[in-house]
Amino acid sequence: MKDSLIAARVIVRERVACDVVSLRLASGEANAELPAFEAGAHIDLHLRGGLVRKYSLCSDPSERAFYEIAVKREPASRGGSVFVHDEIQIGDIVSVGRPENYFPLAPDGSGAVLLAAGIGITPLLAMARTLKRAGRALDFHYFVRSLDDAAYARTLQDHLADVSTLHVGLTPELTRETLAQIVRRMSAQEHLYFCGPAPFMDAADAIACDHLPEQQIHCERFSAAASDVAGERSFEIQLARSQRVLTVPPEKSITDVLFEHGVPIGTSCEAGICGACRTAVLDGTPDHRDDFLSAADKARNDCIMPCVSRCKSGRLVLDI
Image (cartoon, rainbow, N blue to C red; front, side, top):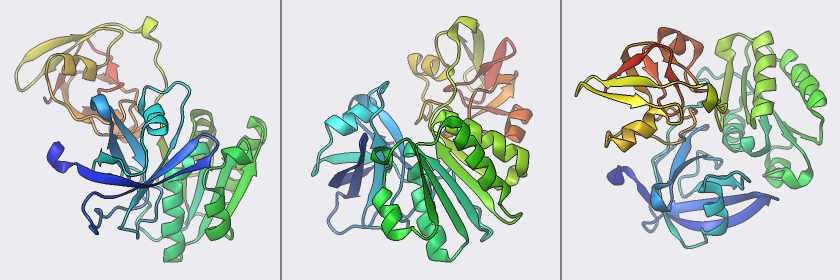
């Protein structure tokens, strides 16, 4: 893992909304280019104490001198956003993973409608820059509670004013009505991309599924729905390569149990949204709780996101 990390230096730190800080990260090696990425990609930011958090790259993918991420300070932070806001300063060296992309633009040259809310603008900003540079049709809508909450409002005004619309202070009902109007206007050749807080995502997803075929709908969630521990039950996991059998109690995830027993497994978001911990299932029926796998993936029951998903049968046999 350490060999694949990049030492990056913070060269710019800027407040881009009332509770959002952006960081520009250059290579720790003088004049070195960073690995290329495509719009929709993210990097893992490695913080002290083994804390790893996933942040979308919002800089222009054509720019190789730096990466830019933006981090919203979360009231219920598990440590990541608070550390970025309170501790990271210009000149600091941080470790980041190479870019990964689970939210890419369709490769067919199609036009796009982008829907963002709050900090969900970050991956879509890179998409908008890519689409505009390529001359592809683009309609970008950004929903915020107030102007103070509008991250990168100046960027939209200065570089994307002709293709973007800022929606400020809409009620949930008006937001849903506006989303429905936007989606209904889409042509059969356009793809829809959306990202933002859970209520916005739920509304956009419901509207999109009513009007568009599945292959034209693309989204990225920042968190999975919380589960009710009181309603959970224990189950077993069998590790096929060692034949070890471990018990997963109601209050712990599969990855929690694997870590406790010294079984290595790749993780990043630990919220069922990034795909880093995807694990093959050889037997048993998963109870899928993630927002990464497609409906077809889940129907096959041949893989699981062990950071959030559980088991419908008494035991899962995992290819570990």
